[in-house]
Length: 378
Picture 1 (cartoon, helix red, strand yellow):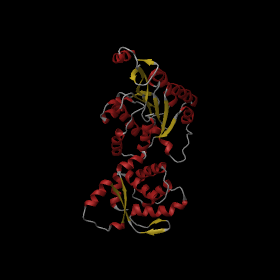
Picture 2 (cartoon, rainbow, N blue to C red):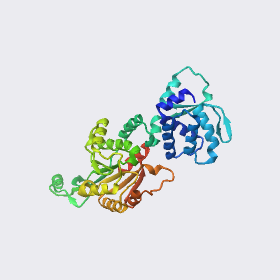
Picture 3 (cartoon, one colour):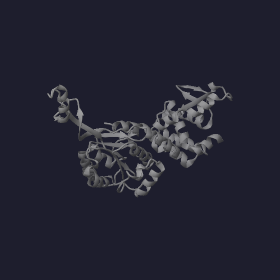
Picture 4 (cartoon, rainbow, N blue to C red):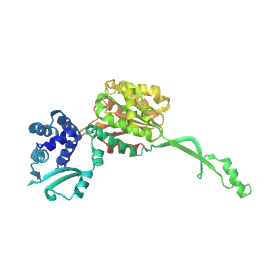
């Protein structure tokens, strides 16, 4: 393979994975998210020194239909070797392919020197933010996590509202008369209270409680989701964050710093069971006993970010989810695996919790978190 491609792969194998999958999809091959993750992980382990290794890593993980093999072969030669013969709808044509970002495209348009005719080149043009919006968190690099965090901070996590005990003046008739305003307005009519004034029920921002699973099975997603909840903590009031693993840990104070590095460092020191085991049912019991029933979850929107893997007793999970549902305004379960083709909630914890979940949504990408932000406003 060309040395230039080897150098790019060594620097950013994830970027080459995305580019190759974009090419396959543009040629009509369906590539599931899970398959893309497996292929990227295989490239990291085997490298790209041997053509046969890269070829079979892609073919075994990305191709589901044997009829797609001829198209895959042509795409593989196009992308990895620069030998063109891309087959589409039974026709073959010779072209060179280039992976171009928006910034690189602008630079090329300003450059007057062109080594080849533009008609001989296929440019896979993409916006870096657009790619990140749809990209699975499991494929993110450290640089992409930072870029994604900036996009997360721009999401408007307004949250819903709930009735408050405080009464506010209103022009509508209600069961709460405002005697003071009524008497004051009567002075304009010779002391006759012709126009009655009333109080209305006030509103306050509804609390949002995040319960983030930090067990080993969630490791590839927890890093991105932690940045999302940190953006929520610094972006609005009435937010509480806890981690779930083998124990329950409150990390609201640690995430309150607007300095991301400082917040992540404080959280790492506070959470002792990061990438450990999973006892969702037991940790939910602790949350309900010490926080939920006491008022943190009462009337709040509770968001559980987890893949649902639980090593504990499923009856405990059912019992605690039932308790949580009774005090919360709504329970939203965010599962990063839900976006995988053919996914079914068969994990023990997920199956036990699902009857008590009001919304079951995806959480594998920025777009899915943007949809979650909309749900939080209800």
